[in-house]
Amino acid sequence: MEVRTGDQFYRQGRPTTAVFPLRQGSAKSVYESPLGWRQVTGFSLPGDVLGLEPNEAPAHATSAIALQDAICCVVTAETLREHMAEPVFRDSVLKVMRRNAERERMLLVAVGSMKAAQRLAMLLLDLTGEHQRRGSTDGTLTLAMSRTDIASLLGLTLETVSRLLSRFASVGLIAVRQRRVRIIDKDGLASVYADLEPISPRAAPDHEIGTAENNEARLI
Amino acid sequence: MEVRTGDQFYRQGRPTTAVFPLRQGSAKSVYESPLGWRQVTGFSLPGDVLGLEPNEAPAHATSAIALQDAICCVVTAETLREHMAEPVFRDSVLKVMRRNAERERMLLVAVGSMKAAQRLAMLLLDLTGEHQRRGSTDGTLTLAMSRTDIASLLGLTLETVSRLLSRFASVGLIAVRQRRVRIIDKDGLASVYADLEPISPRAAPDHEIGTAENNEARLI
DNA sequence: CGCACCATTGACATCCTTCAACCAGGGTGG
DNA sequence: CCACCCTGGTTGAAGGATGTCAATGGTGCG
Picture 1 (cartoon, each protein chain N blue to C red):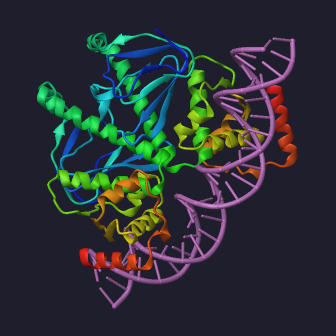
Picture 2: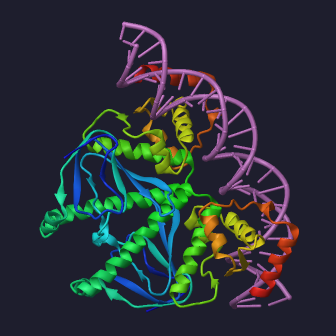
Picture 3: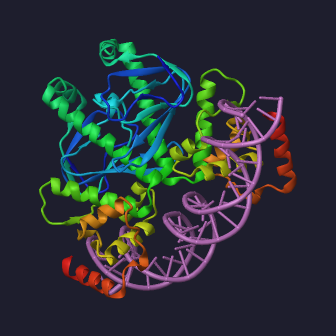
């Protein structure tokens, strides 16, 4: 099945008639609370399975929206149920679900008790991890999602995300240009994530900033 | 099975050998992230089932700790699995799991995009709801958890929680004394939750504060 | 009684949001 | 082809909400 940028794979609250293994493109999951608050709860890449609800939920807990033109399979609930009889298939499906649950739990902790820089570093590390797992070797990745989406996921504002990316860049951790990000210092990011070194704007002397600018011009 | 205050029903990461329907007392679920960040992810009351993991997880995703001396049943994974064959039982178990999942999702949105006052109002409303569901008619409830636990759940500090409770009290929404809370204006709390009326410290004239103090002395 | 522990309150620091202006790229129509 | 615009992104200044540090107070328990 083909889905255009911005279109929905499924809607929150609608009955789960099928799940959608993602082949190409990417998607975000959005949860809308009863009061109308909306929040991005995750991003999905090829290989993920959209709409896989735990607990055999009869309805989708979130909406899934394509961030790019995407291609996915469609596995009806019925055939899914049939295949769940096969142990191998069953195990891999459960594994995906658990992974998602784990991710959401980490997100909760991140949003609940980490600072903005840590959260963003975490996201970048997670994304590069997924990227590498999909076979890419270089440290360059293209964010499919907007700053607004990132901000929503992390419980921040888009301005904060933007500023933080700039700051990471100015300190030489990454290079940013639009939605292209190159990871320069993964360990550095990791220590920001672990809050080992607070990233202060004035941490980098002027000449350092110059270096970072060179990086940016050169690398992206 | 009896569990003393502070003792654990089960530990995060340990294999799920059983689930624990809670009969008496209360408990908190605590998640510890790989980096050592710890966060309360929920409170449980009699009637809840502790340790019920979705996705047939082989290990507990959180630790459960008794907030008071508690009594619970012990249902081994095996007997649970057997009973899951019965449709009625099965449905009610799945319902509990979905309810938990829904709660956690609302928490994520709350922590990610609502202000402190809203989050706390939400918690209070949730707790009174659960309280009433268990048959109590009056608006008085006793919090089994410390301010620190509440703060952790809501992604705040204990000081903020304390201040906010005082503020709610000074505005006449509730009466607080230690861990006893009396809900005075449920609708008011609801509108705080919905962010309809920002609770400013100076919103209440002096005589109002006097009234609130009377309430406190009288009601708790 | 005195010791922990939890809770409250104040003063201050800081992080983040808010408001606002500006900028860049990508598409569209003239 | 270029001017235009429109969305998304960046950046600055200011203020507010929350965190932090610290002192005080209350409660229950040994």
